[in-house]
Amino acid sequence: MLTPQPRGDLSGALFAAMVGHSHDWDLVMRLPTSSAADAHIALWSMYELHYRGLEDVAEDLEWHPGLLTVRRRLEVEFESELRSRFTPPPFQEPFDEALFDYVQQHDGVSLAAHVQRGFDRDQVLDLLRVRSLSHLKE
Image 1 (cartoon, rainbow, N blue to C red):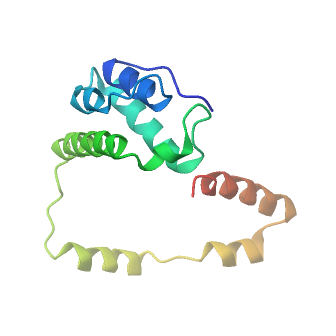
Image 2: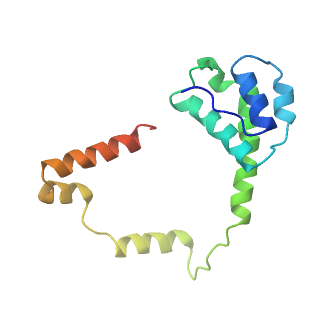
């Protein structure tokens, strides 16, 4: 996969630095995001370096200090945005106790036991196909 099309000033400067057209990481670290799409495509592409990589980006760039600085700034901004939109539910008891109680009350049949007892060959193959896609990034 090649580097995606930039969605703004930050992703444009970041992608240029990643593919080697520019080595001005100071500029990239100072640039604000133009939009949410700009921030998200930049963040996604930096994460992709840790998974399969991008064909037009050197592998050793994965841990570049300038890139990690930009990634951390975008992560903090994104997390702040998400937290500002979330109202925590009121709990009568500590969260960990409520969570463990909920899990204990809703513990059902394990997937492995259900597959072993009730799936035919085609269903097992279908499950494996779906699970392999979800594990591809791991």
